[in-house]
Image (cartoon, rainbow, N blue to C red; front, side, top):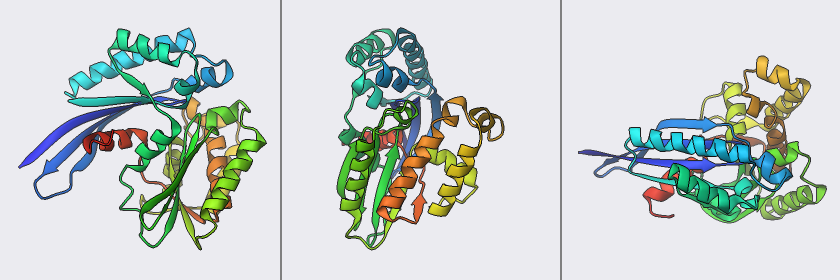
Amino acid sequence: MIKIKKYAAIDIGSNAMRLLIANIVEQEGKEPQFNKSSLVRVPIRLGQDAFTVGEISEENIERMCDAMKAFNLLMKVHKVERYMAFATSAMREAYNGKEVVAIIKKKADIKIEIIDGKKEAAIIASTDLHHLLKTDQAYLFVDVGGGSTEFTLFSNGKMINSRSFKAGTVRLLNDMVCDVVWDEIEKWIKINTHEYDEVTLIGSGGNINKLFKMSGKLQEKPLSYIYMNSQYAFLNSLSYEQRISELGLNPDRADVIIPATRIYLNAMKWSGARNIYVPKIGLSDGIVKAMYYNKI
């Protein structure tokens, strides 16, 4: 007997907003299966407002309300039985973040929770990583967002340490990540990984997923440091317009992909990792699983 549950997750990031609708297939004696039914991504760059002016603009509040109304209708059509909506870095830092949450609840009837970096990292880490984590190895999980980057160290299949830094792609584009932050990241990675002979990176986020797709590799295969380095040089050699017209990148991906690649490269360099694995996971996947297992 198969039972299917429909859950949805809304991820309100600094570069875009996503709605993931998932089918959870339950079968007696088997692990539940999480299958993506629909994923909608809306390019509303809240970080541009939050990190430069300190508040979400009227225009973007309007766009968010429209997007949330659409998300609500989509959930209704899909007959979603449970959802959760989380906002990260940009909404955390905008001084009108709570006000925006209230407006969206009133106009679109969607309840949003603003979460901190630690909770964000924990939710993402609660995704299906166990099939990737070999118990005798150390892994540095790196999730690059628009406003922050979350680093989580795993060893022997267990989480050892986790930290969130205010170094995200939208911040980097606006030249808002000072050398002190880079030094802190370098220090944290080196201190936490130095006792391991070998560390492998696991990358999460829209940019690394795009880089992986562009590589044409099979899902289980990693990207090497050499490949990442050459891609970084290649992307830098093209203009913003060329990255859109020649590589087919979305306009809101064509600029942030470069600073994102820089973060992954630095994480590889400082941890001594030669490879980065890219499972298709993110905050929205984590929300669905955490809801199902009653972790949030």
